[in-house]
Image (spheres, rainbow, N blue to C red):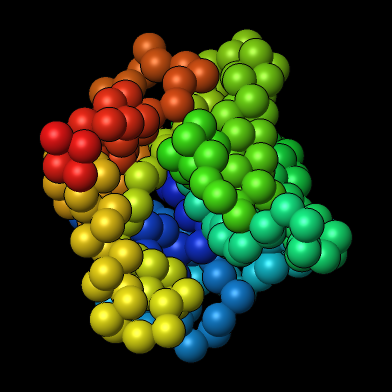
Length: 256
């Protein structure tokens, strides 16, 4: 098993990519702490993940909540070997009609809280640990009406490179996984109907060279690679798990 004896933290581990990653980490031998803001989904996640998982209700943007979280993780786990800073939000911010508070909240959740999560984790992180930040193809491609989200994910990429400089003396690796369109609960949350969601799915699939959306397990496998010793000589990379849409942006069926 690739993570035997390892201890991991996954923020936003109660659903979607975070939950799929927690499940895979446990399968590979790790003990996993997951966080989320919804106690109901946290309880359901732990019930499915089993005794090697521990759940903590925490808002990653709240400094007091972070302090309490890492105190509890330290008591339960002692130390950490892996941090997957996965928690994040989307949101529309069209130029000309966006409220400043909406824009700033997206940056706060997706970028600022990621830095402070890593900072708070450092006293618990063993030398040789792996930190994985969750980015997005939108940080490279952009997307109409998503300026704050795009900026936050581009910021994650730049931040990871700076963190890697600082943490390399401890042999701590910092990398980014950048998912493309992925079939998670969030995917349908913004749609007014299942028909609209299916239409959006078909549009994206036609633009993706491999012709389909990603699944949470696709992303989890990439995170496992970055967390494990299989990537022991990989530092400061952004790994796109996107069916080829960044590397071949006009490679999908819609452009053939």
